[in-house]
Length: 511
Image 1: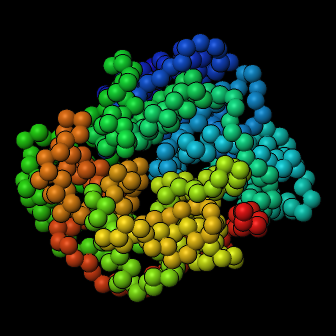
Image 2: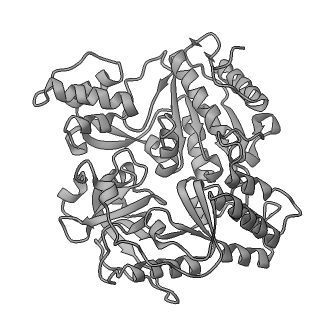
Image 3: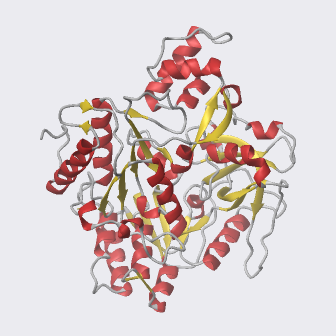
């Protein structure tokens, strides 16, 4: 068959052909650009697996382009056009906003798994704009919106394919055009899931219910989801449903970070030998740093990756101490991690509002300042299409050797947060930063304990995941020390270009 213009390796070409065959059975022929209406029948599922740098994301992106060119409609959690019998659809999903943003940076219109489970209900007047933007209708005339504003929306949509972000470019807020949220009741069609190694059993079953045609992309060398007994969703698939990519395809063929990650596959490699390898690499390549201390300036946007909770808590408190953060409040620019939503079932709409805007468990957030009401915070959600929000917040600062966390302030209910200057390697999966600091003494402790996961020493899996979070530079920190900050915390790098967009939640009375 004729492959896309991009040059594939032999294993990528084989994977492309196998996926194309699966899609052809589902009625979508990539070679001839033929799209037939979906038929009832058995579901199809396949997994494309490979380590970091093996070309999974390139393959995913090229398959998306081919499906789009064939006439398959790409849907997201932002807006979905009216259902037609002959319409075929594709959704590209990731477990977290940060993971979805990595794909969007590569031009792939990805969204989160949660966002596809719940869809927005649009005000009928503004839905006309959404239909026009997505090619389903004519340019509308909307009272209060000029042609110039609509043109701004159109230009913005061409860049990122997000209807809410395009409407925001026209001067609208989410509360203007979204009247509520509803659980998806009807199945979709084709689903691509990146970072599928992070899926737990419940998410996997939800996806199987929604997508009759499901393609999983993941790295079997990563850590299995917590409480999954070391297993991943790939383990339940037959060999005929799994495709393995092996060759490294990243542009930097001499990438020292990837070289270190792949060296961990050697069963005879011990921790001390690996550290010598890291130190030798650092001497000849400045993309790897042999760190004698944790650099506090990096922690505000790129958390230190650790294994043990006790280490995480100590580093967080050291970060706050060197910045002079008072116990009773947060400083603007402090990083947070969303730990879930604390709302009773009767406040389902509020929960959906929070989650739809990216405040899901594991989301990375930066504190921008106090909201208009006590207990509310202005927040920047890293990786979200519309990152600036305001929400009722419960912030927990854990203390060394103390069972209960300190809570500097809190709403009675809302989104809960832990501090984000340091995170466990488990929680870092699916994310990527330009520079990453790995706290090596924690991995040494894991090596000394001799623990294994899925037949491999735990320290190697931890090291592999931690190292591959770095896209530009890896800091391998070997001493329990912390530098002093070069400047106070700031949010100037996040808030350029507009003020925070308030959630409808803040305008309501707290229950």
